[in-house]
Amino acid sequence: MADDLDLTPEEQKKAQEAEAMFDKMAEQLPARKVKVPEMAGRNKSLSEVEDDEGSPSDLQATLKRLFPSFPENILNRICKSIMVGRVLHDTMLDRVHLTVDDIVMNWDELEDGQLHFMYILNVVTTAFEIGLNSKGREDAIQLHGVAHETEELEKLADRVG
Amino acid sequence: MIPDLLEVPQQPFTSAQISLIIADQGNGKSTVATARAVDDTFAKLTSIILPNGYEVEASPALNERGKSIVGYATIYFPHKEPFVAPVPEGSCCIAEKVRVFSNYTLYGIRHAKCSLADILEHLNDDLLLDGWVLIDEAYIGADARNSMNLLNQIITQFGFQIRKRRLHLVVCYPLNKMADLRFRLARTEYITCTYNEKTHEITCEIKKGKDRKKTITFFAPTYWPYFNTEERFAIPESRIAKGLQQAY
Image (tube, rainbow over all chains, first blue to last red; front, side):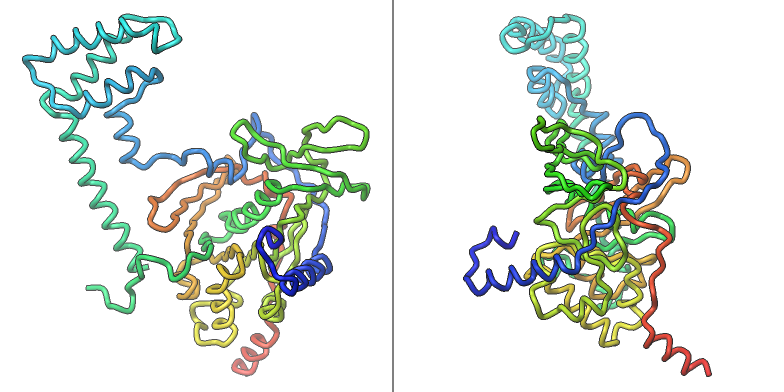
């Protein structure tokens, strides 16, 4: 820490003195022998858990359910925009047909895994159904409104301590 | 209408790291405070003093995401290939670059036990630089009720200098309203926690700055070897004497 910074000789001397003072004060006690309850697997430390994604808020969890993501990049890329797009009734079936065709034709080039036609068809159809008549867009806006209200309430709670 | 006096600024006064941990008794605030220092020690581990007094060189054992694992280390024995193993029971871990100051005793990691008097004594020298300052049961020195008290004022002034001192200050209180107002205003991280006796897990709600609250759960016994939850905190003699004076 201290030696990572550019220090003048005087500051270096002070830092060394402080280091020596700390060494003098420091205690090196052995860890206590305590009976730790047995749990399956290795338990993560606080910083490891913090590093992982924390449990999502209600809003995040709902958004995840409403606008799912998929392990395949190609499906993700295409479906994300469909879900919040304006899908009209008249064009939906044609668009599903064209989209599935396109994904199937490019599958080998873009994805390593085996092609599963019904999986692609279901995912694409679901994405179009979410975006049908701009329903996905409306849901997202409604949720954002709720989140904004919650945020305001949290701020108010903070202010009153 | 909320009175102006209760208005909390949107931004903290400084960008200093002040963690305010609030929890009822036995709900894991000491564990969370200890965890901060223990995690940092394991992340910058340099050696281990084994139970037989022999000191071996060590470095952090990393998980698949490159984060250090608490309780494990890469150990370098002379004339042997380095290997990852659990840190033997009764050892003490040392990270040369991590200075930990705490007002309670820590076990298994190098630290300096500092009473509030020690902190005051070293306010003007370079000892309290680059490290962690853990203050458990902080109401003993910095209670919101005694905010005009000189000790309170000095402690909170110290709190405001921690950015310049490159320190992480962790203060624990059983109730939010017991925390000195200045700590409440200057905090950059606000943690509330609860302990589940059945699963031995602590659930923390962490709010950092303007970020949304994050809820995490971790296994408390991981940190039990590093502190003693039964340790008692002495109330300053002068305060007891003053109380006695008023009692008679």
